[in-house]
Image (tube, rainbow, N blue to C red; front, side, top):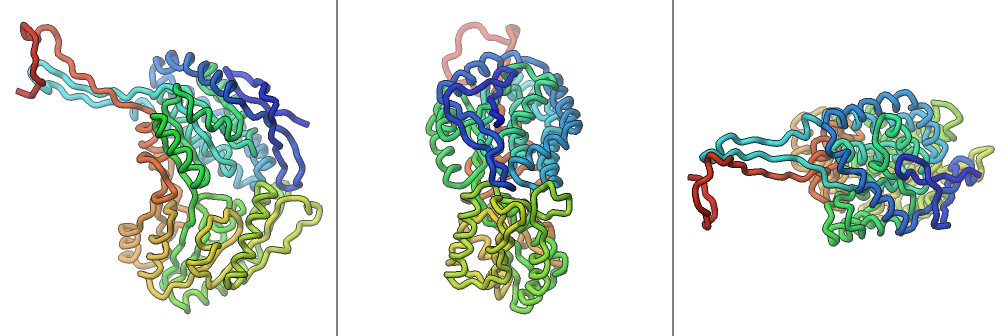
Length: 499
């Protein structure tokens, strides 16, 4: 059986803790590798080496750091099929979806090539008599990223590319469920010219996470995962004086107005609700048709589309709609919540509980489920299911529909389908959710805008990628300069003011 490693000081290093986690093949239910789980001592040693390597990297011209990103982009494009295949094998995503995972991370790396522009400071000439004032954007030093299983290529790149190009060293703690792609990305960064020690990939579990949060050298931490863990990391990291950004769970609503193109809306719901087996923080998990007639017409179109979804392993070809969920525990939890929905009175229009795939009976496949007449007191409405389950909540009016999304504790993403510009504009302006789609079901911003949710979907005041990434991974230093020809004789004991 393959034994994976850490990536420390530019090379693969075996773990020394003696602890390992199984890396599964979700399609077969078989263990395909094991990954070492780092101890606190291993993590601290890697951080110390990163701190030693960081000053020389930070002193490098920003354009030269950007050239490393430029070479990294070329290497990802060269190896994208290899990366996607490894991702599909460990996560279970279809091959096209896995390539999309890599591509959306690659786009952030491409944005980071513009670092020389984004790292420019500000300058004021003659702020006072003979005084100039300017600001510098300087790296934090050592930063860390704790990334989830559901995007093992994209989110590590969202974290490490801007952190590195800003001149930081970076500690990446990827998910132990699918660690191969982050290790492959580290290899490509070394090939692209990244100095040894500037990027350390440390595999681990809660012990490693706590070591990151408690290590005094690490100045900033980024996290993506569930809300309870996000709250834990945010509170503990901030208590230790770190800059922290954490992105948590979601329950994304899509409102369908009576004037919407229902064929378009039904197609959007199928893709956004069931793609990647629903294991996306931007998945649409709640459909909110406005009016009984709209709801009935939507269900007529939606049910046959959901029933026709093709489920299978990534090896079955590019026409597979979604694959297995990541673990047996995830499958069990999804089916438990489905049963809860039935018990609490929701109407199950498409029942995937008995789904079984010949030859893959031990895999973690879950059939597609579609609920209608869900109410806000039901567990399937309140809870992030993270599986191929779409709930329909019928609203009588637009105001009632928008209220459902605004009152939910999560505020990651939302969408509205309508032909009316006034309604769309009102929705975008009023909704208390971080990312909004208008006739776009999964409104993930492009790399040069920022990604982040509101309410219990996001903790911290800066988002991921886009301009916020450069703000998060740098600190501003402001310099006030006056040269000797302008210095008065004697000391000045009162606070300086502009004359």
